[in-house]
Length: 128
Image (cartoon, rainbow, N blue to C red; front, side, top):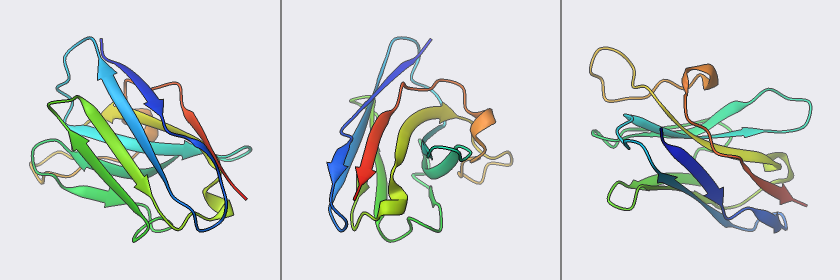
C-alpha cells in the first residue's frame, strides 16, 4: 500500500512562509485526491486543502484561502502545500493523505478526514 512522508515543517515568525512536501512510495499512486490536513493540540483534525488528480480541482478551508496553495506532481508522486502569510493560528501538525473524490464525477474531493486512507506521520508547523 502507499506510504506517505511529509517534510518541510518548522518554526517561523508571523507572516513567514513554508512549503510542505509529501512524497508517496510503494503501492499504487492512484488515489483520486490528495489532501493536507492539520491538527492542533486539543482540536479535531481538519482539512486544509485538497487537490483532485484528474481535474486539478482544489478545495481550501476558509481560514487559509488566499494564503495557501496546494499542488501535486504525479510524475514525482509528490504533493506540496505552499503556505504564505502564516499566522499563529496555523500552528499545528500537518498531515498529507490520499482519499476519494466526490461521487458524481464533479472532479472535486471529499474533505472529511475519516474518508482518507493512507496518512503520513506528520510535520510540525509552529508560527510565533
